[in-house]
Image 1: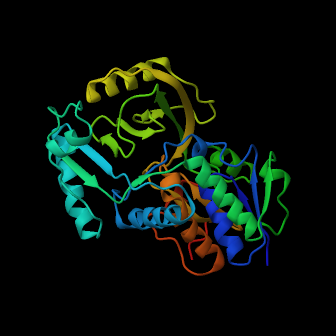
Image 2: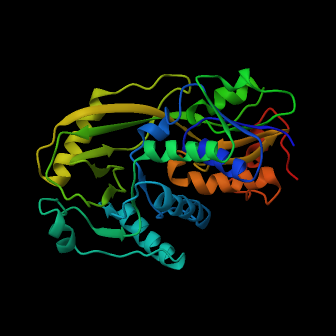
Length: 347
């Protein structure tokens, strides 16, 4: 059987390697930097099942189940706030959809939220949705655990090496390196429809909030934040950036996030540090999974949801490689075949 080389030792690549090695295949997990050195290492670590469709819900469930067993997962819940007419309609639609999908979901009252966060401003909130089984984890720890389990199952881990230095003629390659995926694919004369976007996060100085504070997101503005070690970690909407540009902290976004937290919580917050990273996004916002060319598979284009969907996505991609099934058409790389400069297996 052919050796399988997985490019990218973030959570997605590590999960793919773990799955394939556990099935008895010869696997090399390689990263040009180190395990969790990209988006998985800088992620907020919030995981949820409140997603757009049943395919992503299934992927997220697989990830959450794995995190419960192998990582420091806390079921603090996910609280979504609607502050616009559009977001109120979206929350109503999402509530009905999640109930049909079998997800535990509630419509909390303001007094319940104020019972654990008395200062929070809710005057502009038209509706709320709470999914109590969602939660938080340490994304770096989880990624390193997945990579370690891949090695334990027989995979070889190589750090500080470009994948192009390792590939041999008979190898199968899985490109799972986030924002570097388009560059790596180009090394093999493959064009993939990805753009790079910048995600910026801030961490505050210590604040007085409950240790089991839910992840809170304003689905209208994109502000989302969680508690970590007595501090708040917050992010906002994705900011577009050229695909090859190194991400950097924008002081204006730091101020914007700080102001948004202050307005929402009605407490003074100051930032202790901020950081920025790049993630990969497809034109339709759905991941690229499965075979893209002969002996080449993709597991990328997650639009910021790579950590969240990682274990479920790995099961789909590994299953296709192992001949156990095929990724569905809405997420398969073949859906962009007419835009690509390479032949795509569409059997």
